[in-house]
Image (cartoon, rainbow, N blue to C red):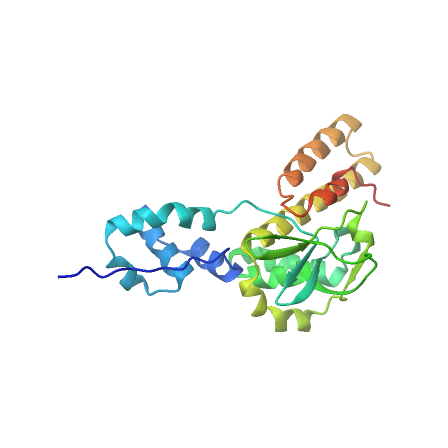
Length: 240
């Protein structure tokens, strides 16, 4: 009897919802995790995937691992569904979005799309002299070489109702870009608190510098292709 061929098309990247499903899977065995990851990524029923030959699953495992554990990348501006979305700079975060971020982060694994819709919002204006893009995994990120990109664009004012309306859309946002933005946000917050502690004389200069260097080293690892000009932002930040 002729063997049935299995043809699969793997996506260029994982969306936030797919990544969330993989992270939230409760199975303990490696085989269970692999089958769930494959089923989630290619949108097949788990029971169907269980019927596939072990050889096929092994061949897929490396590709699946690369997708599921893609390196975090931070981009200040990305094109998503034909619209420009800009990262919400820590220094300009409002009390409302900070409170929402804090509450949603209490259940991060189930609120990724909502958090993503806070961290990235539509660019309403910019002063780049024409936009240049870098493209990787079909993700278009702005790659203009400027000293500080956060000074070059303005994003939509935060509105919790608009954020709720966009949550479904952001389920398909690239998970590794979301993770990079989240890491960058947390690192920026760490720098902010570090400066506050020093300004209030609750820590020494040496301790401040050690913490700062650790945070900057972590942040630098999230800078992805298309974001090289943004490494200037990793210089020590002084907050009033």
